[in-house]
Image (tube, rainbow, N blue to C red; front, side, top):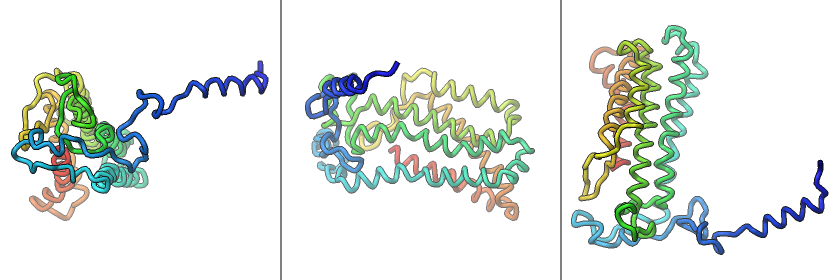
Length: 279
């Protein structure tokens, strides 16, 4: 049964009249709020110019780090890894015959290798979400579960960071282990698929208390449980072994240390970038 046009218009007008913008409905406020284009950033958080919160190891005023240009540059850098991820997937797709030959004509292994960089990139989206929530500012953290007076305009959210870091490391594990599964095959470690699934379950479902206590400039920088770190470490080792194995095909003319260095250079550089970003 079709609704008469006048009734349909009336319903639309009625629905629209109940819609409120953030200027009239505080629950819709953002950070920044108005304007809030993708390149807009909130004013520097108060803790960035509070020597007490920054601690004695940092300059007393860090508000200059929250300049809009600087934050937009950081935001751009966080999105650029999608380019090499797509290029790697493209290489596997267009040269699938080559990779199938290496992987004993098992297209599933080629598919795993194709998916691995895409998974790794999208596994970093929890971090981008966290940074967006913080307006991309690197500021001292407070946990709203501990401080009921927490304000996002003053501090970054430690509880959000804890949740985001767990998802980042678990999903990065999935990306690492997917690549390793493709290159090393299912018979690695007797039954690599079982070990891979077990690692995911440990990292994701493992007890998140207690967490590592690692500080830089008297600020905690690694709010992760040992279960998540352990699973991630397993993925890193397997990934390095996969790159070493891949080096046999990528650098057939090299031997010994020369091939080893070239084989592990890419993952080590990626790891170094991750450490710098995380700290």
